[in-house]
Image 1 (cartoon, rainbow, N blue to C red):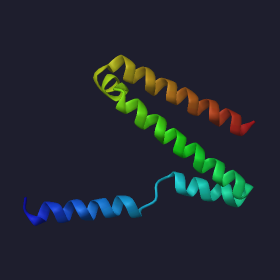
Image 2: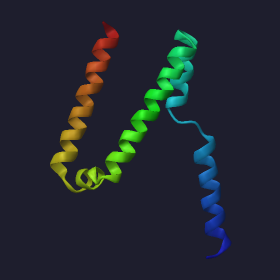
Image 3: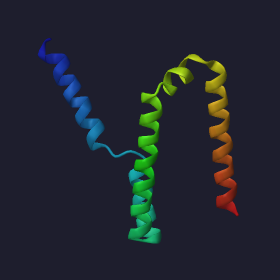
Image 4: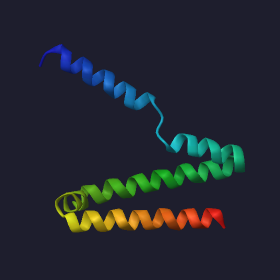
Length: 92
């Protein structure tokens, strides 16, 4: 292996580690609006959700979703319905 691909990989890995994801501003917003306890609860929720996804993929759910158009479409529709539900709750 030459050094060029290794350096490119290292640079991209560094960028992915340094740049915060969408959960960071969410946690900061919750901390500013509702305090430290709400922010820590949000961090725990994000972590548990990530672990659930990792376990699901490790058990093969990712492969099933990837290969089945029906399952993928159903998952997208359920996710969209859940986002609409959250939006309606936020408005109320």
